[in-house]
Image (tube, rainbow, N blue to C red; front, side, top):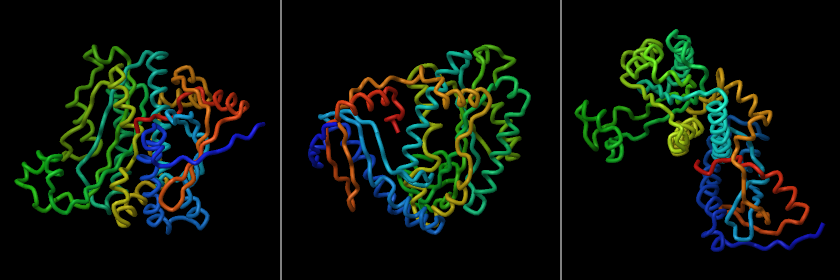
Length: 361
């Protein structure tokens, strides 16, 4: 096999390329955040676990071309920890493709339509968070057992997300975001924030229903009825809203639903806000199943894993002619590029025939 000479690629050369944007604007900030996350998580991991976490993302190989206008991860040293910024991002990108494929397959093969349902409750204290999530899980299980729900919902995908408010005072941005909440309480900008250091667990769920659901009054469940049932299941009349909407077959509507389910269970700027905040998130999320599949979606997830749904994956039309190797050095990636050999060109492009990760996350 001929050996092709590798050449160093400078930051300046990377800047204006598609692959460079991924490395500089997405991966580098997440690798930097990994340093902070490692400091927060070190007491929860073994010596080996800490080393894996610390060195995660130190090395990447990308399939690309000479212009660096296409990209596909070929190899990496990943720790696989759900609290790692890089691994969380990679998992979300793969989940987005998986969920999109499941929706397409179930829509076409089972003639199903989909509802996006978001369920929440008032914020809780750090000390209450674990029990509140347990209450959520039980309440959701009971909601799905309701006769009116059971007879129309053929399966669901459900994601747990937690947000937190760490602003001691009401900022301009926070007031704009929660204006109605503050106005009812007669609060203005710069006042003390009553939701400071509170947490909000909530579920995003995609429900599969028959097409007749939307045009048969005996099946359709109104938003008010969803709210009433959720209040009853949570035994909490303080709940004032649920969000329920049809996931239309348009690309925009479906992508929005996919991203809601695939995205992170905790935003990076929140979970790594401080050691104290990280500890709350860690104890609440450790060992939990964050993304669950039920009914028809569980059935099709098994098919996805067996490769039986590959026909619904988008073909990767790019031709990969080069390999970029990225090495983390102190605070940046150093990169070298080489041409693929004839054997590699054939093998790697054959392996890369499907798009496996979403670029929208």
